[in-house]
Image 1 (cartoon, rainbow, N blue to C red):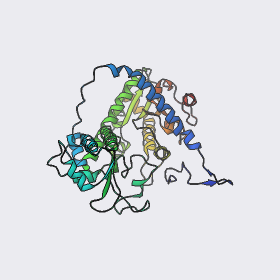
Image 2 (cartoon, rainbow, N blue to C red; image 1 turned 180 degrees about the vertical axis):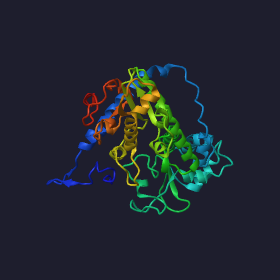
Image 3 (tube, one colour; image 1 turned 45 degrees about the vertical axis):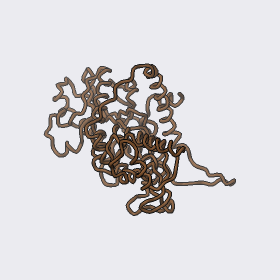
Image 4 (cartoon, one colour; image 1 turned 90 degrees about the vertical axis):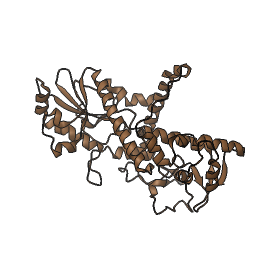
Length: 400
């Protein structure tokens, strides 16, 4: 597992005991991934308990599809969206005919048999099946020239070359390989990919078409703005005046220079009712980490440093916005017509448990990470103490 490039949180060191046992340091996972899993499981149990009654209620009508979603599905999988949605069902019918749940067939023969199923006549099915094909390789270290090693990295979920993205497995090479077909796996893959696209969670190299990448990027931006509104509403319920997606040039009444534009928007700006404290909030609706590699990668994005390309990481961008507002607090007070210059504080709010809460890598109190459900524990009218970050109730959460 190559993790040293992920901020050095995991050391690529293996030790062998005198008896031949492989020894490894589990402290990183115990500090970060373990409490994340505990909190996530508790959330899921509570959610399932709250929604139990819905199993006996009238089903809600199917939600409408987002604009551009069906077109993105067709561009990505080389099939009309309706045909792609019913693909696993059609393959299940073929499996029933074979009286098996899994069978081996030539890819071209699979296309021919699938073309006999209702809803698939008249299409060139080979491009769709090739998109879903996980090609055979002569060896684990044999990386195709047009692929990267990380495409096959087992430490990464949702890697491009995996069965969750390419559920038809090739077991021979060539233009018309033998493949293993399992409709159950294809159905699971389709559900995962459809939900990942609609939720904006699957992005980048996972997709092959520019249409799908554009759609997923737009969905991620849209959901991010909606989360800003959600955080602002939650903070307002605690008695603060909160606004979502605020431009620094607006709240400081300054000209929108290139410097201010590079700062980016303030996700949520909150002012206490007495006007003595201002909170510059970074709202991040990011999914929880599922592996040690994802955990290390997430932490490396929130160290408050410059990345290898010289650009600031996610935390540094937030800290820069806080510092800029703090250095221009007089403009903020004048713009908002406050009777006094407020003390400016920073805060990162997330919707799901994140490793930054349990292993903070920056000493600034403005880098504190809190979950949306824990906002009542934020000292809104006092601010954080000038000490190294420490998440409130983190030990209590780990005991649950």
